[in-house]
Length: 274
Image (cartoon, rainbow, N blue to C red; front, side):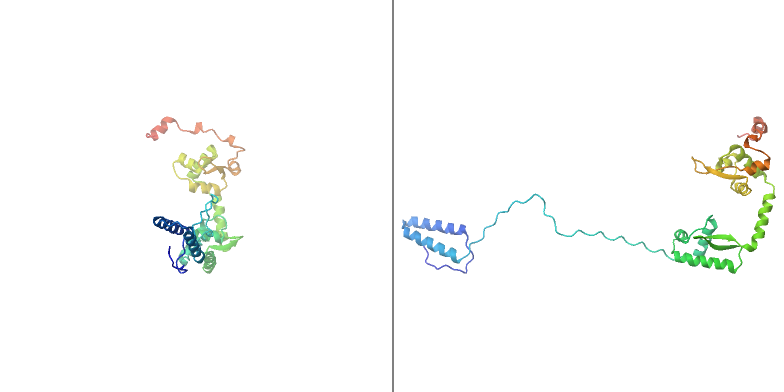
């Protein structure tokens, strides 16, 4: 048994260390044959004093089972990144701007607004607005045959009033002039096959008929009556003015085609490859 005083500066002792020291002391006493109860009381008192003045080593606390739910992170949810703003359209060269505006206005049948023009030209609406004003001023400065004016919410090209007599004379004389052979053939195809598309008329005649069709529509002899469900092309038919000019009351009064068609032999002679 040791006579040393307890050292309070030592590291904390554990219950395992105390039990080991007590077992060693008992083995030593057994070898000496010293089983005096008073000696064991002294050993117990010394151990109690050591425990009182030195802290006992903390034992690990067993984990307490918790719910099976995984521990969720307390981190805040990430906010989605804002979408990048579209880049503003670039300014066009002034020459390119005026040329593009003039081309678009020329092909438009109805007044067109500034936003539509800006989208087609891919430039800011403000630049389109300045370009339209410059274009209109240029027409007025050189007394051009056309003028650019605002119509409702859009812009449109018109013929200048000073040239109205020229335009009227052309239209009146054109109405009085005779139809060409190509126009008469096209009109006959439409009259007998109506409603018919331009493509079908071209296939029957073997030539393009766009120019002739414009003439017939301008004269009021042909008009569009719908669209072909298969091809989507416009369907054309004759107008009441066509019947009036021919002195007919209806299409049923058109003459039969059979007596007017050439003989098969004649066609083969003229077109041996047909």
